[in-house]
Amino acid sequence: MSDKKPEPKELSDEYILAAIAKESKEFDKDAEIDRILKAFRLDSYAVLDLQPGVPDNDIKKCYRMKSLLIHPDKTSNPSAPDAFDRLAKAQKSLLDEKERAKLDECIADARMLLMRERKLTTDSEEVKDPDTEFRKAWREKTKMVLVDEELRRRKKMKAQMQEEGRAQKKEEDEIAERKRKREFESKWEQSREERIGSWRDFQKGKQPDKKKKKIKTLG
Image (cartoon, rainbow, N blue to C red; front, side, top):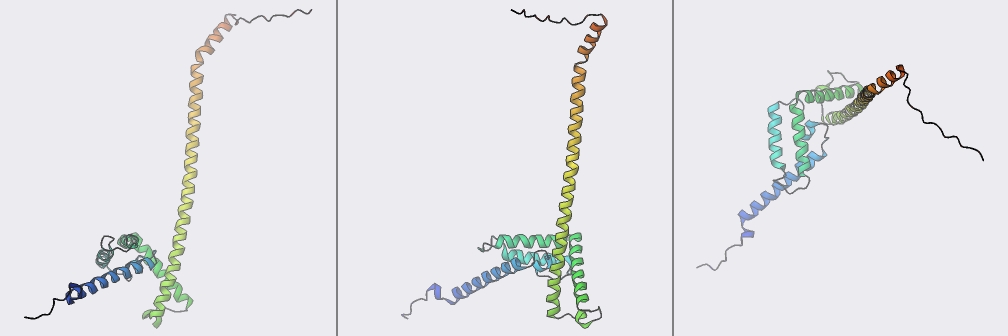
C-alpha cells in the first residue's frame, strides 16, 4: 500500500484551473465594464464597440453577449449597473432609425471636417484606406461634432421650454381674466333686484328715510 496522502483539493489541477478560469472571467468582466465607462457615451457605436454601418442583427448580438458578461447579477463590480445601463441605452439608440441616422450624419460630418482640415478628397489614399492615426483623429472629430450637436439640442429644448412657459402663463392669465369677468357678472346679476327696487322707489317718490342729525346746543 502506498503511504502517499491525497492531494489537498486546493492544490489539485482541476481546482487551480477552475480558479484561473474564474479569475480570468472576472478580469474580462471588469475590463469590459471599464471600457464601456470610458467610451464616449454620445457615440453609441463606441459604447458597444462596433463600427458604423453594422446591421441590426450584429447590434443585437453584440448587446446580448456584452450584457450577459457584465450583468450586475453576474459580477460584484460596483460599476456594473452604470455600465449595463449605458450598454442598454446604446443598443436602443442604434436600433432607433432616426437616432441612428443622426449619429451616422454626425460621423459623416466629422469625416468631412477632417478631410477639409487636411485638404483631402474622397480619392485620397488616406481617406480610401484610413490608417490608425486617421481613424483616431476621425473619432476625436466625431466627439467634437456630437458635443456641438448635443449643445444645440439642449439650447433648442431650453428655448422650447421657455416658450411653453410663456404660452402657459398667457393661458393662465386668460383663465384668470375670464374668472374675474364671471365673478363680476355674477355679482352684478345678484344686485339686480336691489337696483330695480331702488329705481321703483325713486319713481314713486319714496326716498329712503334719512336719519336726522342731532344738533348740539352750545352752552
